[in-house]
Image (cartoon, rainbow, N blue to C red; front, side, top):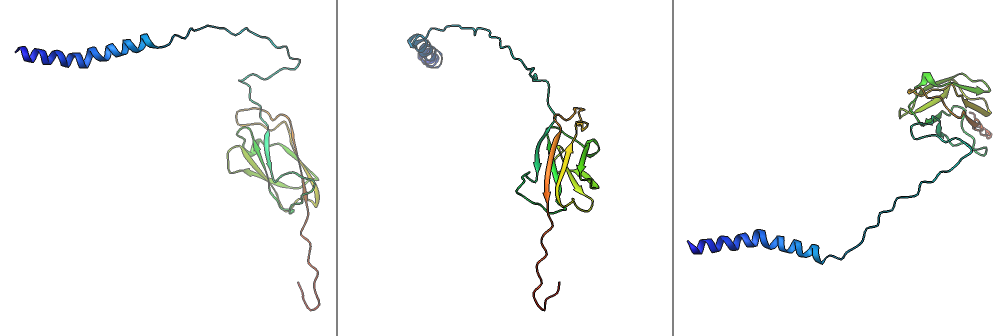
Length: 167
């Protein structure tokens, strides 16, 4: 019986006492790093213009396609896609087209995009599409600022017919 007690004592010693001893030893031998508590000094900035808080989201056009450039010309039936910062439906899009062309609006591939397509074609030359501030997101936010998109269009040239060829 004495032998079994000795074995139990060694088992308890290895399982409980030795790990606790090493834990205490590591805490004692760890280098001391003093903690300094610093609180940042509050600063105030005075700005002359108001800033939007984190709870206020702006609703705006964040991208248009195709790319706007006075050097690029697109076909007269080119659809124009607008990507908004919020979800918008075709019925909420308010816009003007100069020169006037009958158009249709449909939902894009994502909920926050709309595609404007001419009924037949855009007028040759420069077409200006203005998305107005009456445009509202599904959350009720009004578009700000208004977005102006200009598209240069041109029909492809008709090739010259060579002798004997007809088109």
